[in-house]
Image (tube, each protein chain N blue to C red):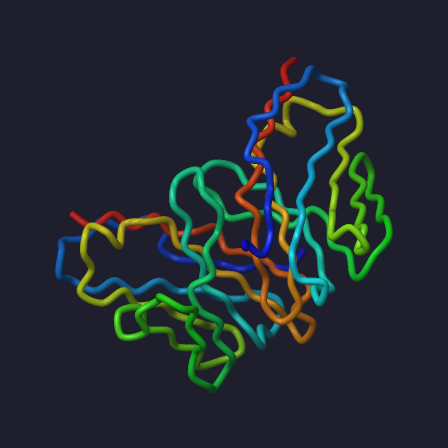
Length: 115
Length: 108
């Protein structure tokens, strides 16, 4: 299957700082990328959908000013958690689809811990 | 109403057993149905993907979609301890919704 690289795999930061997570599609052009959040023993919650070159579409209840998404190229999307707080601590996962989004390939996830 | 419902389990079976995992969904417009396997603190791995209805087989895995009942299934034959993981179903069209995952434990 296609390869999606997510970096970093884990990050610990102080409350009030910002954290950037990168998601790269290594062997295909990702027209669309999705960002998910997953709490322990729970399913993936879609946060936003980003299309290359346009603004991300956020799901209801997700603060777009807090979770900044940039999809500047067909192979890279970034999620920046701004002014992180302990309640933002979670497992964040990106996924990418090509021209046919019926197949989603996931990154390995980023465990964010905010102290 | 949730877009997709999945029994969280856990499901514990002996090695060699046939495993049946299921999800129900609410929107008849959903066209794409996927099953993922996820190990703890890792990203989900795509196992099976089906468009519209019908069956699809890949080795020990069979995915079934019954659109009339809005019901999807994943069968695992000759289950192995290495199959122990959480299995997530996903349904959708332009965007995708995930079940809560079923934790499977295959005992040697």
